Image (cartoon, rainbow, N blue to C red; front, side, top):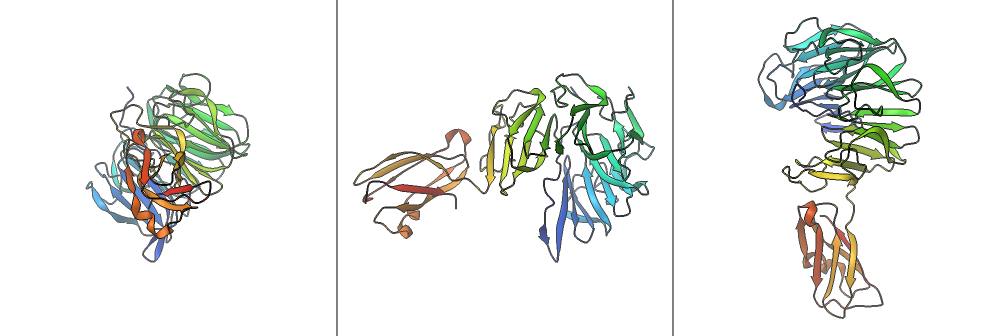
Length: 404
């Protein structure tokens, strides 16, 4: 069993814009049991678990309300299992929280409960894994520090960890992603590279062998990356979504629960952004729709269901459209002069009702109160209804179900 506790590794799916008083929230970062967010004035806020000082508020006390940590100049955030990274507008890198394996990069193994400056300038991108950290400098160089037992730092060594930033790649790196024990990066030529834990095939190199050096996985055409607990996602320039690694909860979205050690195409095109959680995945399409797959034991897919965590898998291996909610699919109709009955399969949980009918003599206003049904289980998702004294007009009747 690997060291440590599982946590959410979530790349920012889109730059969210959320009203917050007179300001807006512009960036978010969920960690193991804590969260950070950034306001439009450059202030940093935090809440949640703080036993190791990962909130950076000068205490080790948990908080269930947002606390302001830095007043201004923050431009990017990254959260690991129990540590946090902060990037300021002058290119300085700051860190706080758990540091037992040197993941803060300050040259010590001491935890800190306040933001500590690690580098004074030149940093452009940050990422935090379970117990390791990655960052890019303005010259395109990749740097890493922290836990390295699985080779996730990519420094070619057998050192268990390092508490100072090490240069891994001299230049040309444009994007980074940190899983729990593995790391991904992109180069300016569109090539995808990986290193670290590969027990479930998350590196995508066709083996299940760990590697402590960067290994090229795809030669060109990759535009975005995301790393989960033991799975990886990437986008290509044609909008196609690809995945590899652990799949016990269907997080790859390949319609099976089998892991794969090679990149597998999940969606042929139209994908614009991706994110990876512990055992679930999200993606956006160019039409603005949000899709999800994988573990749903806590309702993390947002499809209206909470699948039993005692059932493995507790989710779906098929990408589901989450927003806008899809209408139920009418699968059967029985037409009669009186007492019309129909059934529909609903792939979205919730409180459904009959919203509209055509070619029936009753006005729309009289339909909604007729019948409702709450669907809470993916395994019992059949909506059925009998409408009394419905008079058929014409040869066909059509019905639309919709969640309120």
